[in-house]
Image (cartoon, rainbow, N blue to C red; front, side, top):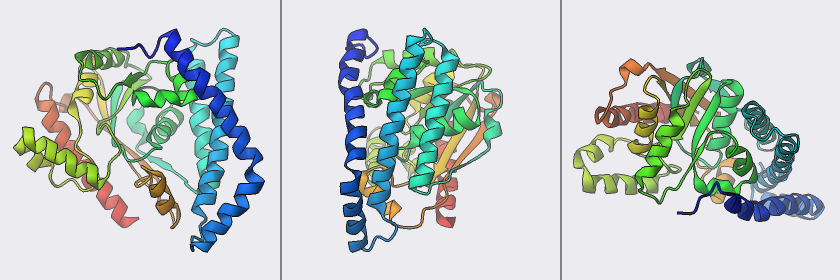
Length: 330
């Protein structure tokens, strides 16, 4: 398997992604006088008074320039010999997440709030979060790094390396970019190694469902589970909002950090932002509150070995009920 961290692999990605990013930023900005009135007219002609296409493209302008600024700041760290300075790179991560969240607030009208941020006090925890949208890594970084003020070690899908900021900064600090198509035990060993660095002020973060949740994926996932474990499929049948968790990765992190507590995290408000069409549908109506909610579980309450998988299922059912109640009341 090619090493995505090798100099050759990094150069091969960045020689395409960075110029493409700068070109996109310049193009979308310079052509704004042309496309902006057109998309406003299209939105209004279709009765979309909240102008979802115009809002989304406005955020696109902000995103391309903030990404470009992030790459420039990362280059500045490299040129001054601080590319391996973890604190400097984690500070850059916080700046990037805060800036993008402010851009979302200005263009889309999203105003997120964090509940239970004290669950991150002192770090030394494995954070297991739901996965609902394209913005989950941004929202969690904003909450965990920006509001919790801890250093997160992420488990992310390898495809995200085509985002230049995640590629450059994400490989300078301890993260693991997972090959989701691989069933290799080496991936789980890498997660245990990642979690071994969890301690005071440091957490590991994983999205346990492995992909963004929607009704179709939930039905498919439960059907696949039923083929192997009918009892588990029946147990997880009541899920309404979340996908069944994939326990292997979460268990590997927990095994790699044997003294760490667990933090269970869910969020609402970004549901449906898993595709371009979903974004337009969501932005066409008044936005629901964006909440990021965390709860800490002492390690003594978390079973080891095979008992962990069933415990995680039970926590996921509880989380699903909380998400469902929050969405119904919003």
